[in-house]
Length: 483
RNA sequence: GCCGCCUUAGCUCACUUGGUAGAGCGCCAGAUUGUGGCUCUGGAGGUAGCUGGUUCGAAACCAGCAGGCGGUACCA
Image (tube, rainbow, N blue to C red; front, side, top):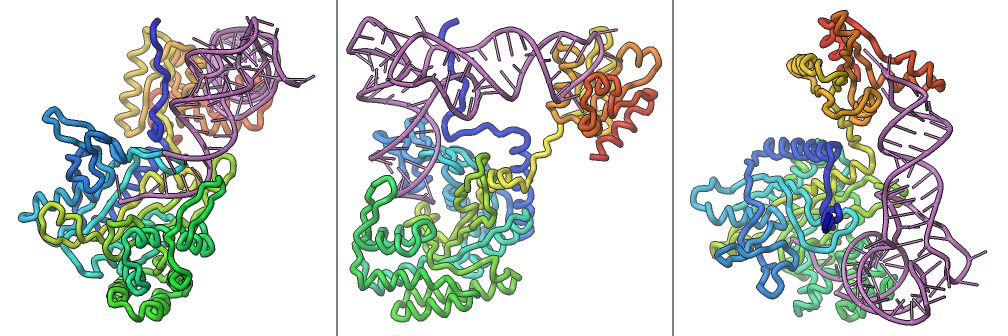
């Protein structure tokens, strides 16, 4: 033999087995149903888009794969795998704008790819499930995204708190403090975004000179003067109030001399009225001025879904999951294509992260049961086995004939490993008497817990019955239905 | 991208300051002509991440690279 490749998946990419797939499918099906209930139509767009359609992270010939996975088509045009579902929607909406019913409400799910450093809970290929409204500038459209998200997590039975902010508040704050330099503005927003990780003290350092982290690395701050730092801290601290209306009152006091801030508060007030009308509880969706999200992308209200479950890894360490969904208003995305301003707002469920979190917490246990396994005794009787398999399948139960070449013991082990409900034996004895032997593997496992002697275990044949061939299907059904 | 730690069997890890590798778990088989688990017995499986250097001799010491973990930056 020559070169042998190492069997491994590329970093940041994972294999998903039956259990994980079942969880993801459940999540997507449940969320899709909620989206459809809210009047969103399904849309599927390709994995690849022309790179210029994906937005500002354009690959160029020097650095084609920064952030995205890109390649050149044979006509030399750059194509890239989509990094979210929103950019393809903007492209689709622009391309079909004349004929679409407006406002256009669509949902979509599927994998997205990001070419960046992977980490726990951060893969380079992951699943999203999005709903967006294109063509409505009403705050009530944002309110509906919030109600939709809350309904989605509720349908999934996942405890989540939605945190809501408005970019206009942040812009108003910056304006009232006289922060006009765009680099400094970004610095302030990034500092605020770190609130949940570094606390008020950490944010204060990042707003000022800068902060040194545990590894000794120094992060340069936004260089705000001390007189400007305190108002920012006051602003982000205003989220502590009990109700949405109370948070708005506190923020109004901080933002008195800012027109844009007042406009942002007006948006949030109308959102509050609408979500309250839709029955969204105060603790399910809160206003939190510390939420920032994607810079230079969102233009109005922004949302982030925080998982309220503590997730532990195999070693019992607390896992920092990050947000399990988010969204907001992005009024400039479609305009990139058409030149016409088109307001839009949306929400995205982080399906892969949710699935990972649920798998870790055991909330969704992967009960991936195998098929009924028909033991293969002899070459000459294979026809009998397949005949029975067909009958079992016709009765609506998954079944397979063992197709390896190992002996009886290995076949039982195989059925055990597949987590099969039952093994079926048609050997010489059964053929002669027109019977079948069926072993209930779950029952056998339970009975075995009380048997330590191997001989008793083998000869006792726990969970096993031999009965007339005609009764096989009925018995198998009762076994499957009992677990 | 930057900082720190790490890399030995499929997995988790040992190998007293350099003398060419071991355990547990897992896997396969037998004890048990047609029976999962337990127990016992046996077996397979390693170029010690890669490349180069120091040395009579390197898994161990040094350098570079790759990969992993943690932090940080970025995150549409």
